[in-house]
Amino acid sequence: MAQLLPIYLDMLRIETPAGETPAGASQRGPAGAINSADQRVGGAPLGHPGAIWSQSHSLSNPFAALGLFGEDLAQSLQSTPSAQSRKEAHSSSAPALIDSHTILRVLWRSDSRIHEFTNNPQSELCQLLKHMMVYFPFGRDLVKTPNPKTSSIYQDMNSAVCELIALFIAAQSPANAPPAPSQVSGKLSKLRKDVQLWAQFNLDYILTQLGAGPLGPPRSTTPQKRRASAYPDDSSENRPASPLFEPKNFLAVLPAIWRLQKSLGPAESKALWEGLLTYYHAHNARSPAKHVALGYLARLFEIQTYTAASPTSALASGSSLGEFNVLPLASLEKWLLSLPKLLWELKTGHSTSSSTIVRVLTLALKRYTPHLSPGFSSQLQLTLVPFFYIEMPNRGAMFGPFVSLSGELQRAVVDLLHYCPDLEPRTLAALNVCLKEKSTVILADVYSYIHDSLGLPLAVEKPTSA
Image (tube, rainbow, N blue to C red; front, top):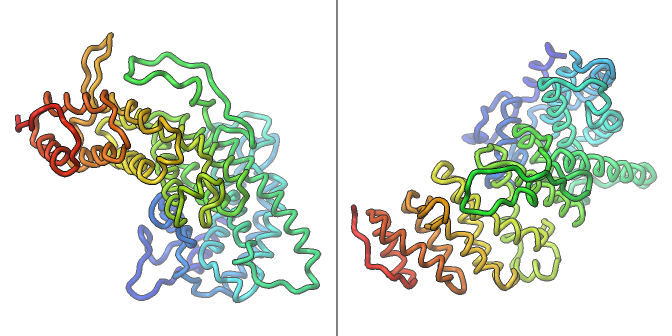
């Protein structure tokens, strides 16, 4: 199989319109395109129907590509039993199975209009998934604890199957499924039951790997001692047991999570949102997984806001917004109020994530204030105080990251305050101390922006450059 993989991938050459090249990928080599497509989650293509692979791309020879399914199915069935041996913690068949899944993902992602040629892709993939679901999630029956390398291989395999299931579920929607002859209606009925079962298995696996458990409440851990912080310790409430997804596997499974959230019902979509929050809270500010989760959650929030003419009224009524199910209001508000602490923890080391936080909070104040708790704005401002300036009994006066940020990000933070219905005295006082004690060219410019453009009250004179 390893020798055939380069030949298969070469047969699956992706063609693009003249002068167009996929971002982050060459025109040949879909294996590289897979990685680049996975990493694009969190960017603009996420909300597009062709988020996984643009619909402008097509297989150069769809009929030749379809011939790979039979060979791939045979190879997968041959590799899976030995890869799942109870006596072995590692098997040489596992890489071959990953190669098999890689080929299927390339085929399935390459052209969403392939059913115009034949229905074989869906039927062949259906047969493959029927056999794969017997062993899914891979590695669950191992007697020995797998070593890190083997565990990583199984997570790669499970991530691939998760995406295949999600893609197959999306393909069964009325908008994508081709018309079926009346004589196969019985088979379609059975297929729908199978798909529902696969979706549940897929959902339970993802939720478990996120640390939330299969449609259950998040698991909590005993609080650990932490160094002095300007914020109270919330580890007992927000930090669950260490999730099983490695950062790279979490990134790889995001396309499957996105498709499941669009394809499944409100209860499942809510469970995925809660699972993502569990995973998000389980990582500290220095973890790459934290930043990936933050970017994805922010995109969900923005998509919910902009996919309906009146997102606030839809949020209040609990209805759905466009193609996307509404995020639960209570947990959404709790997540928003946790962002100022992360903004403080990031300091000046992650400008992209800091900008994301400020953008999300500003959007929440602009569009959702009437439907959030009455004290949301006041509570948000108070949690922002350490970001500006705070006096702590055991550590004295502390300036927050605000004074060290770029002028653009400082103005964005001030814009956030501009959308608060009423300014909290403590927040305004902390901002005043920054302007008085940290006189820089940037803060002098921010002062003019606050005083002249926004008209916010300030108790200090305009600072001068140091």
